[in-house]
Image (tube, rainbow, N blue to C red; front, side, top):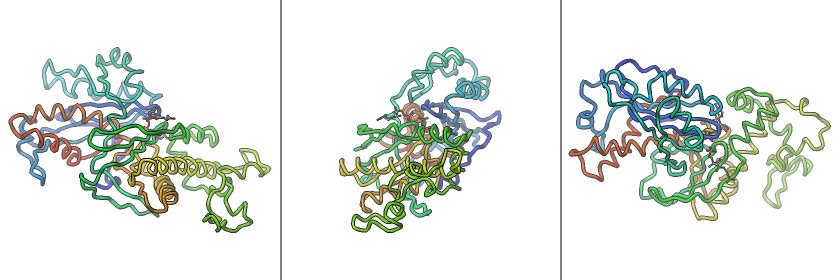
Length: 383
Ligand SMILES: Nc1ncnc2c1ncn2[C@@H]1O[C@H](COP(=O)(O)OP(=O)(O)O)[C@@H](O)[C@H]1O
Ligand SMILES: CC(C)(COP(=O)(O)O)[C@@H](O)C(=O)NCCC(=O)O
């Protein structure tokens, strides 16, 4: 599925017959992400525990048909998140009144720092315990990847036996870099505090933008050469060919501000936004490449809400990896970029329950495959 097929800002309003199973939450420094699974019994006149047997994928594995739903909130608006969960009855399994007593969810899979920070709040307001999963354990990559170069998106089919090792660079508030060697086999090898929070935080101060999307939108229209010092600015308009630096390459991010006799107000906010986005994306791309080099890894997957499928961000990250690796390493992006942690937490509970649902139907190996198929066959709604 192409990311553009993922609906955004859709008002989630399941009808009365939607059943909600499995809520998982990723509490990040900037955003809280919810993932939950709904199934409408009107679509299939079969009890959900039987649905698995009725439907099969092309691979022959049973699949539970339904919708994986996505929703995000700013972490600073945690009360809106609580209200949403309450109004959708997500903490009650969505439709407690239909299921009768005894179905109330008492624990919800949760990841990210807020799983600790907000544990008491959730217990107090919703009566649920946050069942904590480590956020690194929840960053999973399965059949999600595409490359992005010069405005061209290309989905990549990666065979499971050719997947490892890879680097996973999660650009959230900060940046975490994981080296993944196999299913569940990974290590956090590096990170940087110059990440999505830095772009949004500095951007807010420098441009007075009120929302992340406004800042991103602004950066589309900007020209970073108005504030960045380019190689050509230093070399009298020429390339520094001896070391392979063309005149258009940024020599020093924001460097022009040193000598320009200008105040902040004299620069266009869109140029500042553009320069900031390039600076942070380039830096992350370069650090990622250096880690890939250190660990002999050729593939780098980028995830996290900073990316937001933004063409310029993806182009810059791809360019940085391509430039520094001299074309040897590849930057890849993920369909569900920002929801990876939440989906990981969701899958950790889902696998357990799916195993229960599949009892007597498939063998242990197929059960795992079936849970992976589920993530692909679901209709995805993002809000
Ligand atoms: N609507 C938004 N509000 C705030 N930040 C956003 C938004 N959309 C994208 N971002 C960017 O995504 C980053 C958060 O990414 P995310 O993967 O959710 O990390 P975290 O888990 O730390 O919240 C922010 O720091 C910001 O750069
Ligand atoms: C602390 C974090 C794991 C939290 O994850 P996040 O909410 O940013 O997605 C991440 O911000 C991080 O790895 N920061 C970089 C810290 C460092 O290595 O310098």
